Length: 477
Image 1: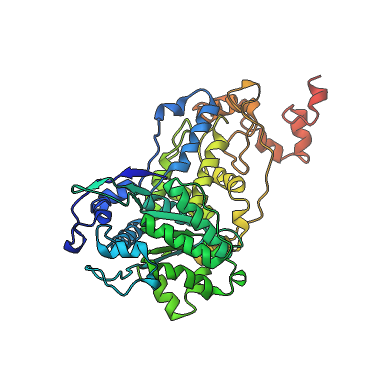
Image 2: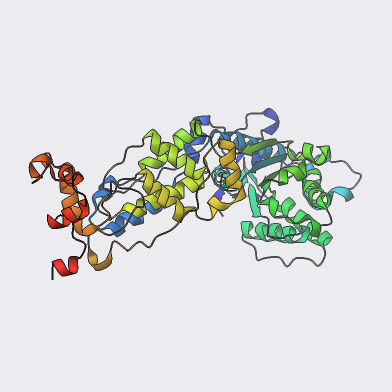
C-alpha cells in the first residue's frame, strides 16, 4: 500500500474548491504526462549483450516482464476513474455538516433535522472493463490505479486540523474463486483494514452485519473507488441469484456514493446486460472492452517494436515483416503471450553459438511458453477470428544445457532451422564455411556428383571413392 501526505492543489471547478479530498488528488495533467507515467521501459544495458557468461545474459531477459507500453484505452479508463473519484468526493467534503451527519448516522436512519449544507446525496458511478484473459486488463489496472496513492494522510488543511486523517483513494480486491456475497464481503473488509494498517476485523456472523461493518469502515476512511477484479469467478448459484450480488454492490453506490469499477472476462458482460437497470448502473461511469490487438493496429506496432528492442543476445536480429507476422500469429495478438514467446526465444539461443532470432526459434519458443494457452478455446476462436492458420500439435525435444562443463557453446537445437548448426562439434568449421569466399577452390572434385548420376549404384560409387562412410567405427578404428 502506498501512502502519501496530502499536498493540496486548487480544484478546477468552483464547487470542488475547498474540498480537501478532491484537492489532495494529483492535479489535472495532459495526456502525454499521464501516458508517460503509465509507461515503463526496462534498462537495456547494451554492454551486457557481449557478456561472456550466457547465464548473466539469460538472467537479464527477466526485465522483459517489466515492460509497460500503454494503449490508448489506458488513458480513457484513467479519465473515467478520475471523474468518478471527483464526483464521489464532491458529496463528501469532510469539513461540511452534511458529511458529519453521514458519519454519525446510517443513511436510512438519519434524523429529520437537515444540516445547513443539506442532506447527503450519494454521487457514485460504476465503470466496467471487459476483456479476455491475457489481453492486459491487470496491467491496465496496475498502471492506472498506481497513478494515485492508495491512501492520502491529512494533517491540516488551510489552518484547520483534519479530524478525519485517512482517505483511502482506491481499493482493489480480487473476487475469490467459487465465491459468494459473503466471501466477497470478507475480502473487502480485510482489504480495508490492510489499507489503513489496522488489525484484521473479525467478520460478523451474517451477511447483513458484515455489510454494516464494511459501510462503517468505508465512511470512516472515505473510500474513493472500489475496484473488483476477476468478477467472472462469481458463482451465482451460491449467491441466491445475480440480483443479490449486484444489488449488494450497487447499494454501496446508492447509499454511500462509492464508485465501483468492475473488471472481468466474458461472460460477465452477459450477466450485466440481462436487465436494463443492471446495464445502466454498470456503465454509468464508462464501459470499456479490451480485445487482443490486430496485426495492423497502431497498438501492436508500438508494442512489438518496444519489445523487440529489449534483447540480450550477442547479435541484433532486425525485426522483419516475416518475424512480426510470425510473432503475431503465435501470440494471436495477446500481449502476455507475445512477452513470453520472445523471452523464451532469447533463452533458447543465448549461449548456443548462433543467437539469431528466426521464425524457427519463435516457433520452438512458442511450444515452451504457450503450450497450454495455445490449446484453449479462446485462442482457437481468436485464430479463426483473425484468419490465422490452425496450429499443428506441437512436440518438444530435450535440450542440453549450454552451461555444462563451462563450455561457451551448446548443443541447443532449434527444430526446423537448417541455417543453424545442429552439431556443436562442427560449429566452427560450418561457420567458417558460411562466410568463405573461396568455396569453389576448395572442392577437390567438382564433377563427382555428375559422374555418380551415370552409375547404376551411386551409393556404392561414393563408398568406393571414400566419400560416403556408413561404418565409422570400422573405418576409424
